[in-house]
Length: 164
Image (cartoon, rainbow, N blue to C red; front, side):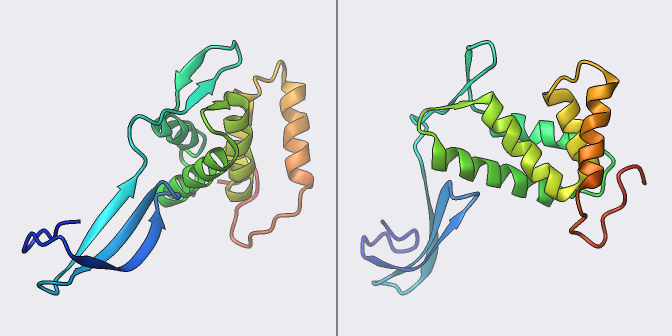
């Protein structure tokens, strides 16, 4: 790696950290010639493409933005920060890249999103589930709500399911 300051090709890595859900490695380097420090980033090349296999069998390229958009819709007007949404997206991606090589099913993505949303905000979870699971009638939705209501609430500051 050439130093951006003196253009020498001699450096040492001082620190390495994973970022963006493990998709990028950040390295702090120090030039052995001029002693200045700089940061480099490593990421998987654009040739690596993950496909999503949809319910109808069609395949589309994986897009993180679509996952985030779905989470944002479910969390609209809820006490879920943009940082929490990014964190959920990171966790979903970590699961995907740990378990799949080239293709992931939309079912896996939806189930992972629901699992993480359920821990963060139960109303957002119900919203997401109602679209993702495509409930046929109000009875199916009520069954899901009742299951969520029967769970112990592990967070102290989360409002009840129907409070706002």
